[in-house]
Length: 126
Image (cartoon, rainbow, N blue to C red):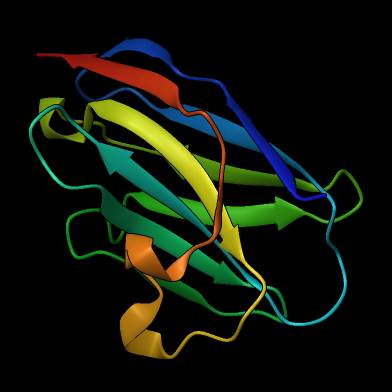
């Protein structure tokens, strides 16, 4: 059974850094994709970063150069390191995974992912 659980959210000041964690279980073999999404009330869930199991990352333009997605395979934990945070980065952050192959254009689409964690809240004050 696939399970995801995020942690590490909190309240920070603009310019600060924060690293989110997502403990994963129930899958480890084959090709799969893992990603981080964020959502604010009234808006669609936005993909910010995706990681392919055999390597390769995809970032949204809004976070490219500031966020880093990576995984500790020994700990089965996915991370999102966020630097130079701005108030626009605030929201509920979710990790997600799909056990199917995704073409490049689908890797930041929420509808392409089948398993989700409950989310962790990030607040950024100016």
